[in-house]
Image (cartoon, rainbow, N blue to C red; front, side):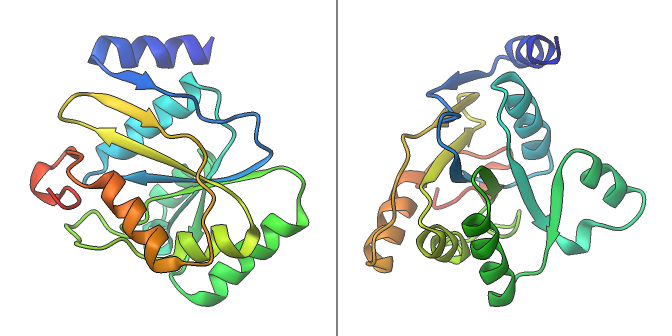
Length: 180
């Protein structure tokens, strides 16, 4: 019922979903770009429900103050600090479990950035899990799921490929969009 309600809300708002979230993969890391507004959260929660995606999102620890923190925890978001120890902890979690999916916004902020942070690359590479690249195109009201992408040992090549894929996708706040 919740799936139907979420899909109906997306339809009423004019949003389409292209591609599939790769629910058949036991382990994966979802990355979502652009992240320009808190509205990304609401669209993301609707898509998560409509597509029955089992994922734990990672969110900036500074957001986890009461009562917002209680709500974020309730909807399945985990607070993280941006440091290498946290990356190693996530890699170890992936390695210790048979089924696990995490999601994050590799821009690391809702502000405009010219380059993605590389933490997601290190997690995917270190844990040996594929990336599922997702775009939230507010200009066309389309959420797109890309086929699984396996990072290589060539970080620069992979980062260039991933950043090129996201280039020009319009976020909720157009001026903050990644490389527009």
